[in-house]
Length: 440
Ligand code: GUN
Ligand code: ZN
Image (cartoon, rainbow, N blue to C red; front, side, top):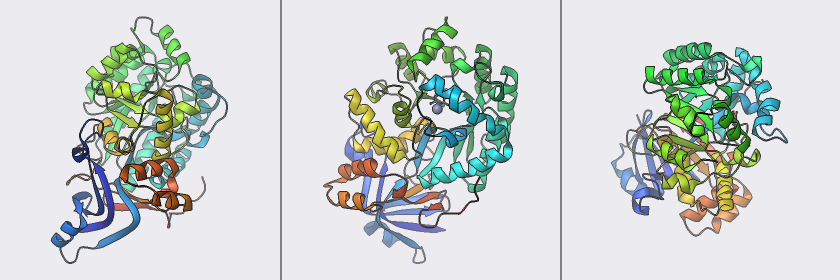
């Protein structure tokens, strides 16, 4: 069954920093996106596509709107939704004081299930259709999260945090139990519908070398599963890893020794890297999640997109809720621009929206499935309201071209700009008719 969406359409085919404009993106001011079931059927100018549609094909009009591929959040924490905006600490103290107590509550399946629904509502309200998600240490947190995703038909990647040291008992596993729990979750969920599993050692300080080695064993035993962790976010953390892994040449070396690098591995932050780490990340085809709202909020430092580009490393955007302060990838782009300004680097508006869509898909090794409107890809897209606030409507009237429009959208836009979110060809969020949900 074909369905057509008419409005301005933008999607990316290449990285705008690498390919010339005409190859990097396609923009149709009066465009048509045609879906067939859960897939993209075709995309192009309305003037040429409308004539080829069957007469009974429904055509929805999206006025004052821009249709984009769904946003992709490459790093976020389910159990930290309740403590976003916790005041006053940097990473290591913040984990002890706020994160571990909040995550302890996810031992309770009912609680984790209720928060999962709220978390997914929030992702979709912000136009995020795919995310790579940290659960808590409790397998049940991921179990109920996947159940909630499956009911909604969403494409998500998640994993149970592995952490067997330097944390309270309430959020600690053991090397063996983390291996067994993760393996069971992989068997039950990896590749089920649109769901994928990520082996999830929290970060090197909270995993023993034995646990990291078992994480590597899981990757070898289950080709195709992902790896997500944190790296080189905060200088105290980097120094601590140096003491905990004295034989490793650098932070990344601790993960490398365990066999955790590769094209399905995503390392969040990567702010304080040495040349050797940049090179090794590139050689291993590993990926980075850039989390600007978190990096500013926790005072962690300034990520270099220029270095990542120089080494040809795929970078996606991460909100890193709850170190990050917004579920919105528009707001994440707003802060990304400022981080790079402080470094003397420049984030072009087109590169920014590439990062939020096709760049995220590449980071998650999902380019064949998602990230733009190539025929056959999954029909995950959003309808961005370009008149959602009086200021945005007024400001956009004064933009001269696409780049300026996108830039203002990312500076002033947030969840209010997401009018509709579609996943697998079905509408899963409508701003003006949101689903009501009992309090949890
Ligand atoms: N490093 C280890 N755990 C975390 C976490 O939960 N959030 C962030 N931002 N960094 C971490
Ligand atoms: Zn994180």
